[in-house]
Length: 224
Image (cartoon, rainbow, N blue to C red; front, side, top):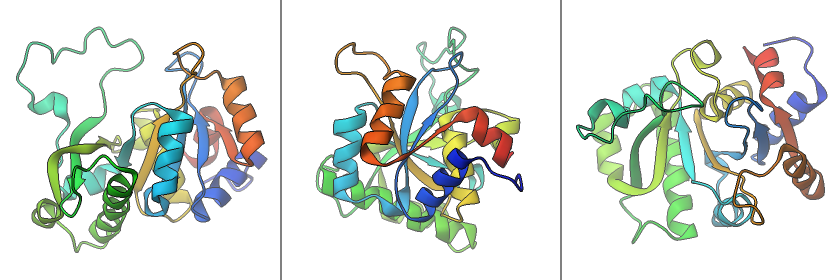
């Protein structure tokens, strides 16, 4: 990690250490999106409500490659045998990061704010246990069922050396903030246009709510 961190990276790391959300914008020439990211261990029902109301995209949990490997989680594009599984026309990246979707086995439908927060926090607990070598695919299957309402994303094994998406930004932030390698997030959308929330509007949202906002370039420079 860089010894001299910029103010925005420092604020993002302090927020993650405190369990607070961070807004991360990737690149104007990639997705051009800002994601609202939380350490998964800090996701309460109130946080889920914020993600779906204030962000509005797909609620997901990013996991490190090592944790996903411990859980024996595949990339969906590697296991789906269907004509639609063709990503040659994907314009913002070479491949998607999607793995399976899950619900915690103690949830009911899995979609409520309470249910999803339970699933997400439990994923953080499982990720922390996997890091210590005390949680495997069998335990994962005993705790979670698939399909479910929380989509799992697998980070690239080398993070920024292999891919530079929000999945990798979240896991890099969690690692630098000494949080479990499980990060919940959601893309911020614009209710007026139906498109991605502009970087300017996302920064304004962060300022109004006292949240950290950081650019992908800054994270790569500081954490790579």
